[in-house]
Image 1 (cartoon, helix red, strand yellow):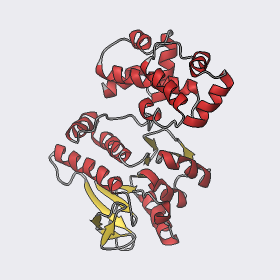
Image 2 (cartoon, rainbow, N blue to C red):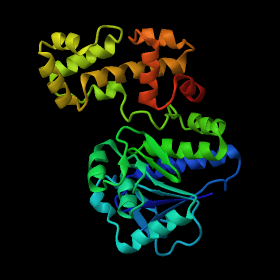
Image 3 (cartoon, rainbow, N blue to C red):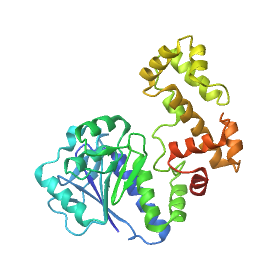
Length: 316
């Protein structure tokens, strides 16, 4: 399969190298060096400088590339201004999307596809720091701000940087099945083969975003006491605020409500326990503070896009 990665000047190196290594390892595991053939295409020939200053040789340009592409991926850049799409490139992207088996983007590469009209009416992912801008600039695209990657028909899009490896791994699984994908993940020491619906942030990472010490203290308390009473009245009392003030300050600092943070923290912990143990749903629910197992099951499916049984089948 011919995998082409379109890279712009000052591209993010991992947006290209990460997926390329996943496809290369898949070929190695299959014992067929030609199973996946990866090439880099750019708008200019020669050596292409990445955002880190390291340079990569380009196999061809948009103007000189010949042959059918099986999978086209557009790499992102830390500066969207470096990803200008002129009329020639727009037409090239549209043509490749019509003829390729699948196409997509890594990180902010989604903006290039969007400028070519290839995200209209589609569910898409991009870097968490660019989701609002993508949704504002291209309102016909349905941006999923939390997703690691999204598959919508022949379109595959991923969140930022290393999430491109999750995207490539999902493509390998589509092509050759789960067993090969897991072998590739183990060989590349990818800590977790994450489902596409998993949040770009764990609850612990999200807890590091608050600037006010009283809010971060509450977040730390939640993470350490998942079985406690974590209702808004209880947390507001602990913070020494009224419920209304607490809810307003918490959302202003973290971008999420206290209830959403609590649910994320509980499901994040339950997910990790589900991967490493065979505890039944009721015991998992109790361990993370859910009194009702049905409520736990609903929250688990809502947050991860998979039932507990499906999640374990794929990721335990």
